[in-house]
Length: 205
Image (cartoon, rainbow, N blue to C red):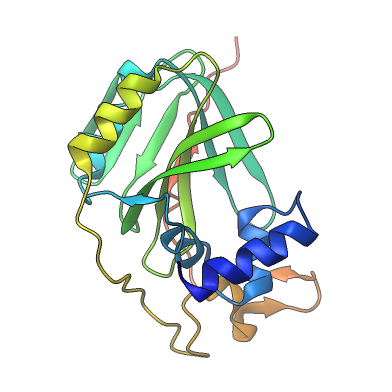
């Protein structure tokens, strides 16, 4: 077990409700580095269109995308997925997304023990270790289908390689002091990027 994971367990014991994103920040690493240190996390091959297209058999899941300012989550079937290059769609009554894979680099199948039982998820990160999209199983999901998916796309364990910020050398640009906006007390990207996912806007009746 890695020293990072040991430090995380100590931090988690003192702050049980701390989310992984915030814990990573407190430990001075990216969320991807924290997930990669988890002994129960299995790396996935970077075949993102195929992975997302294989989610339908899981049944009802929760799709989650977040940044420092907001979180967007929906629960439903993650089906009807198709891609044209790095741009894809998932057209469903609830999970209705436009997906941009330009910045997807790392993926993991994650199993976490919680007071409510085992929590299973698929988590995807960009080249700096920032989370771009997550899919969580719900009580109505098919666990066997999840296990089959993770076995199908599992990758050999290897050393995690993240790109470092040119400004400060940190793995995650979220923590780069050069992008911090002191006027808004938030974080400001130095350049625009395609979002990992966006929800389709439906026309008003």
